[in-house]
Length: 227
View 1 (cartoon, one colour):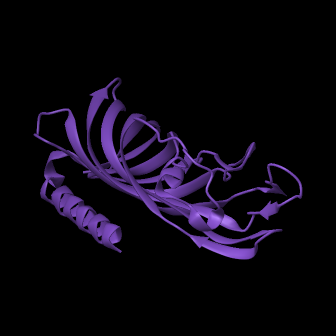
View 2 (cartoon, one colour):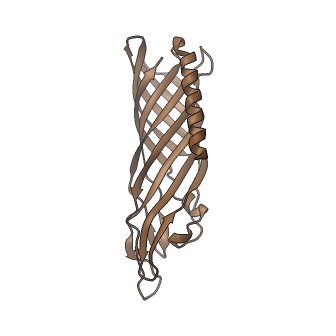
View 3 (cartoon, one colour):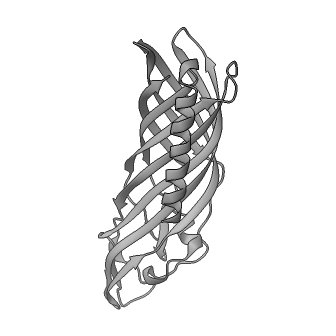
């Protein structure tokens, strides 16, 4: 709930800033759809599981630091999406078999971010953007699983991972009345990643393991308005 409150506060601030600067064509409100894939983790010796690719919606607010500057502040929030894990196999390192069925466990992912971007015109209505942002990413595996040796269990664990990200964007602006319509695409890359250290049972998923599930890339398409 704390992260949701923080996200609501920064989005409200962004909206008010966009209104204040609406006469200078220096504010953007962007709706994006972002695709990611969480990384695989070991659930047993030689048994790796990775949730399917997932796509989630988000909002981004942008505004220039100064009227004649190409540098922009940015506030964004990606809303929760989820994808299921796929393991349904023997995870025992030696007989007898221990079948883990994790196909009903889903991995939820979301974040809020703050950063800055440099927007460079490369044509009459085309902009190339280079962005550096800090993302507070929430990774939340949850759902019912079963093992031959332990019966049915339930996991609902969560980790928040603060990391720097770099994004590259390319968009086109089209004049539509008093403002511009903006459409484009971007690609993002995490500044670093965490590696799994132990193979925990599903019921004792540790923070390090959950952080190792965080994606290392993102790709999105977006549309919005520039005031």
